[in-house]
Image (cartoon, rainbow, N blue to C red; front, side):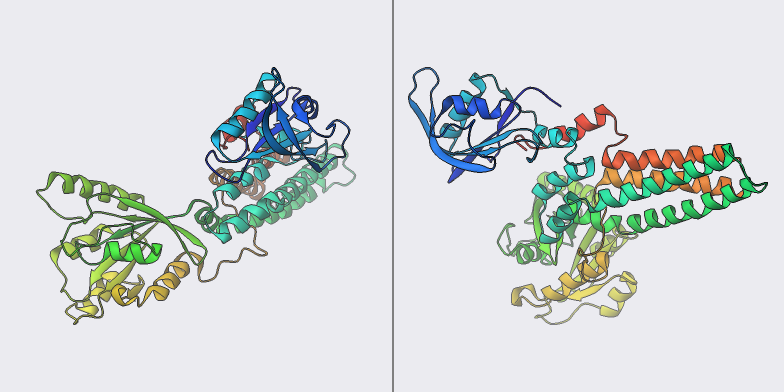
Length: 458
């Protein structure tokens, strides 16, 4: 357990009603009591809040009017004594209180250090700690629900059970080998290991089967809007965002840069990218936009390909169909309020089995159908965040894939009759990979790197 006392501002800097300075450590309460004019904080009950004033240590003048929350170990977030000083919002007031606390000997907390202490002191495991940041960064209610369940230990509990199953199996086999009572002990050990590795392998496969959806909920769906100029790309983005973020004019090629915006589509966070039209151009600025658009296209999870109902297919449209070949895309036929000139049969032929949605964005028609098509494409309809355990963290997904491969190596060894002590090496590797997810076998450098990504004060 760390012995020094750390402090940081735990609310965003700026004007607001309240700002909070948080302290954690052995001297958190006594330090605050030194500068607090009000009740004696060293004698108050745990988990109580008290009105008073923070005093300047040197001049004994009033520095700030505050409410102070006192929480005593071990029933705190860090399992250390924790104090939260509620100040008036604003940069001057909260920074002055922080300066006073630092002058008493507290150390400025590193990014994520409060959560790191919660992990090191055994209150939460590594996957739960990472879920704290996922909750902060959640962009939809579904993403928040997944993060809350991971914070609550749903994934941790499953991983711990799988590790325990493997550990008990290895121990049981070793006992049989070391203390054989029957001639067929080797056959029994192989059968026991075969059954358990298949069971754990099936559960890991089930977790990985929804990992793509979990990653989307956590990180958002990188979505590019493409189409030749003036088909309604910017109008589509504005409709989804519900406010004007892109310039919409009658002049083809108006969008000269990439515009990004997060939107919530039926619980799916979409990182919308409105790109410059992909076409040959002599304009130097527009040409730069076109090159960026091509790069965005390759990096996108989903492409919204907009065509004009009032125009026939052009060579540029055909080139775009070729550009998105093999990628995940939805065809949007816009401007259906105008006369039809588009060959729909040809579009269906080019799109193959890709969804086709008709819209009239100026009339706000077809948007619901588009949102449904997006949800269906990645989640087969509604997203179940109730009973399902989602793996959303790319680190967790990679470790699960490594665990799966190690188990497959063990299963192959069993099938070809390899000695059990060799098979157990792969099973033990699986146990270690799973342990990295919850932090039991994670290195100090990995832990430091993960917590460095947290915001200051969390």
